[in-house]
Length: 143
Image (cartoon, rainbow, N blue to C red; front, side, top):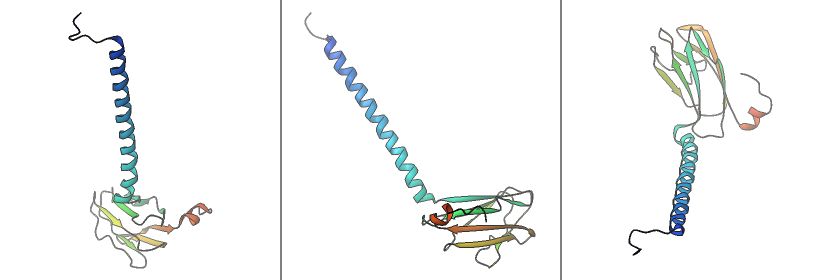
């Protein structure tokens, strides 16, 4: 043979090893990118607790968040067929009228307990507790 267009077995094996190494590197970089995006996602989008409004109830009616994150939020989503209005008992937040399908976001200014109700249906009540990790893991079982 004149050598043009001919690859020996060793050359083929070297190319296969090179391709496998490149694929491994791509997979590893993809994995690290996903891990990084998940970590950054909490920083960008915040840690949140979602409260669903449906059938004239808040679900869950009690929620806990840890204050170790600077950007945690509570989100109420009105999945009911009528308008609701989420209001804190002490006046610290007020969702305004929430038509079906709308949501309200509350960013607690500090740790504490926040009692709230639906001003259009006062029998609907709930409680938020924002605490540090020590309180959450020291046996707090509800709000």
